[in-house]
Length: 135
Image (cartoon, rainbow, N blue to C red):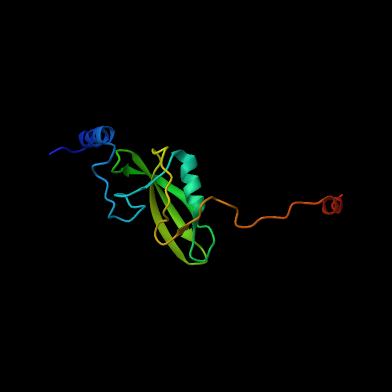
């Protein structure tokens, strides 16, 4: 039986040769260790997490907890904790940031995913009249 580093090398070779991961489990929930969210780099992580929306419509608070074990694509995963304050709910999401050509289109755990990360609140652009009030 192959274990440890040998299995990771075997999985990585299978991905390179076949273009798909042997260990991928699409029937597992998105964001799990077996089916991590795939993004391109740290900026992809921030982009994906910034596009998530809670049931109440707000963006969840999130922070990285640690680098998790090796995922099904042969890469280390990042484990994020997400919290929807107004909905009193939380999630753990596993992200594989080694997929520069992939942009996830699905939310995790009942969270909606918007097209682009836009600010939830926008402030009006100052006008000449309003900016002179503060002199």
